[in-house]
Image 1 (cartoon, rainbow, N blue to C red):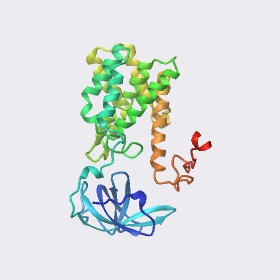
Image 2 (tube, rainbow, N blue to C red):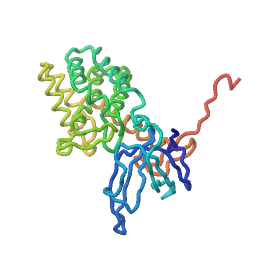
Image 3 (cartoon, one colour):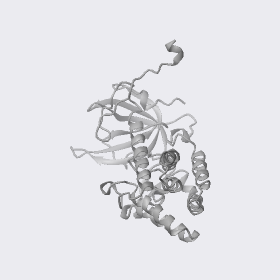
Image 4 (tube, one colour):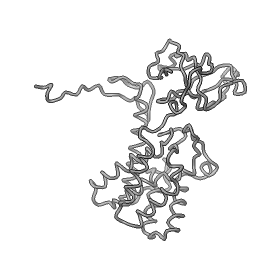
Length: 319
């Protein structure tokens, strides 16, 4: 079985390739006719393909199925546009896992790294609280998506986002010795813990908002979660106060969703690490299909992104 990856598809051509259906949304065009936005995955990337003059009821493909699709690639407003012209069952044996987009590092490795880092913190109250929460929520942490649409939207995306933040926290806490290292690391590990209850994630990594997630937000839910386990463990009140503040302020600004603005060194460090990792991931995804020395066609975070074309010369080459 050969999968034609979206990154290799060229405009003006049609391809037949196995792909997984991960989402189907029915919409109405300007002329009043129904069409579908079908999210398809090749295992590395996902795209939205149009299926015109079609309703969900008429569309025989189901979410989670892998089928042979005929995909026509055209150009629309300077970007590739994908259209489904047909599909049929796959006649070959397939492994659905090959089509599920997931974090680039195994979930077990990421979880073990975060848990070990929490376990080795000097402050017992901070360490015990972080470890307790990770033990209790492990089954969901292993595969939860970090968001519905924004960043790290794939299987184990939340764990990958947290993993990179904890790794950054270890380095930055050494650069800024005025901070409490344990609070910064545990704050990074727990800053998005409320997403476990804010979102529901299926086996394909698709996330939807729960009722609590729609009515509240993950920061408030996270504070409730940390408070619950802190009460169970008898965690020091000052430790709990600081961790709650980090969660409440990790979005940095009120207009970005923070409950309060960061008011401690630890909170501002966690907030900046969160912002950095979410933006870098967005840039990484947007630049995946861009050639070196070129810019993205679409705006990302308000700008056209550029991928540098720098040829690295080694010392041996200089000689």
